[in-house]
Image 1 (cartoon, rainbow, N blue to C red):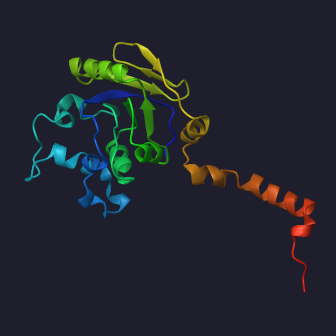
Image 2: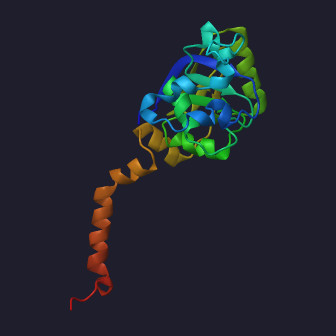
Length: 206
């Protein structure tokens, strides 16, 4: 998993509230292996018509936003099913962070396990960020995980909160399992110490 420290890039305003995981990646693509790259399926039915042509007017099909790496969404982004593929689709397309007033709970947790940073800011602030991005298509924003700040196109800065453990894992580029495996020497040392101190736990040989 790629380490997350700071991302400075174009940002995408996504005004739809309650965007569910089936809109992020439709269910019919879920059987495909991760190695195919889920970025091609991101917002598929919103981006393309039945012939596969891009739908005019959808924000991700507009040239200034094609290289966006930060998404600024409306409330309850990623609600619906538990599919981890929704995060894969965003990540594989190139997005590294999403900012919204709220997220679907499972989507929020899945994000951290895949090196993707979900940031919660108040509703009014998210609306203001989207307004700035619509007025200045392709304008950059910056997300600094170490400082826990978001820098808007106009240069204003917001601070966001994140659990220390999740922050550490993102900075290290590991998920929960990867973090545990990095502690294997300490775990082994603890186990040996436990055996020495609690000999009564050991089974006697017959």
